[in-house]
Image 1 (cartoon, rainbow, N blue to C red):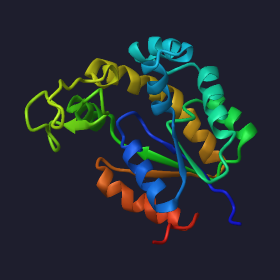
Image 2: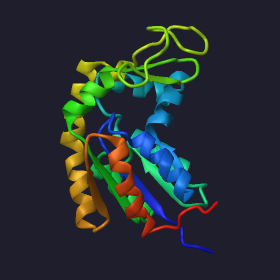
Image 3: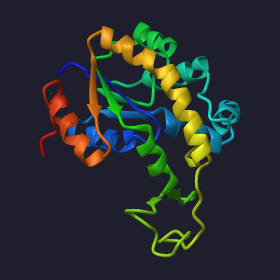
Image 4: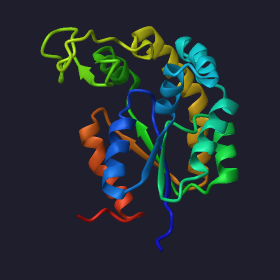
Length: 217
């Protein structure tokens, strides 16, 4: 039985974490756990945790440590295969809590310029019913403001609006820089610089190939 591989992907909101995570899962058979997806699900379902989290998200602030730690550790507990954490931890407190429970083998840091992210997210619109995502520059809807499949209205997520994005990026930088230092000191951090996901991904794939088996067809 092969050793479990435990990885984290870190990067500012809008840096391509979701896209690269999906490719890591596809090529290396890791189970993906996204803190953002968990939060959105709980917000949409109006759970008690979701209602509390929504207050912080709407204000461009990060969700409190203890709320996130409990949520993530509860999700990790039953997992019996290699996994990839996306968007967690974001603070040293979260990182330390995770290290107390799980050994982290590799941390992928997506270093994408903030201005690139602001411009990218300004162009992102979603269909709330299905989660389909459109980009006005490179993947626009056939009819402006409407979903291609249903014809229903597209929306811009509150956390994609420029003022909210800027506030979140500033908060992210202030709180996450120490996390990167924490993992760098532990010798498990690898930085990937760039502005385009398609150019960053081949480097991530090559890096992981030397650390965990590729899926063979």
